[in-house]
Image (cartoon, rainbow, N blue to C red; front, side, top):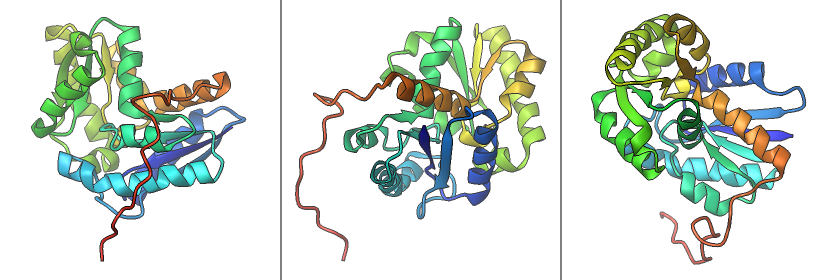
Length: 238
């Protein structure tokens, strides 16, 4: 099977990091294409960044469909343009946030999610509610590190994750920790070993969900929420 992985930001180093980790865990018969957006923000850390990233992300989704891939992964924990991507795609589109929150709810009673800064805490709350998982969402764990720092400084990021995760387990009833950034790909195993609770790497989870969807021949329902958008004239910027 062929899976198209989109890093919706423009960071080449993060894309290379993501590719390395996913190549390590993919099935032998899975072919991966891991790309970043050709234009947009270097990292995604705000609603504004998400909005800027969406047009280029949707272009990549169209590309995956045109090139005959079997599934698409949006490798940003904000899942930018996920609903729109599902509308325009004839193949499954897996957002790493949506997929991992649902898997976390299967693996423990309460889950917590790491996030870069305090500004993203309300977004995590809103997204847990959007996915119908607010009763299973324990807390956001603020790392106070930029996305670029998480990618570039793995040991510092792991140490910070351990500090906030221990507090969540002790005080919030957290049983599952989600590493809420594609820049943290590959960190889960070390953190889980130290912490003693389940730790999920969303990019890895999304890859395995995508492989399963392809194996099962499943697609998004197209009768309502993800129905193709009506064709219309779109005025381009002069």
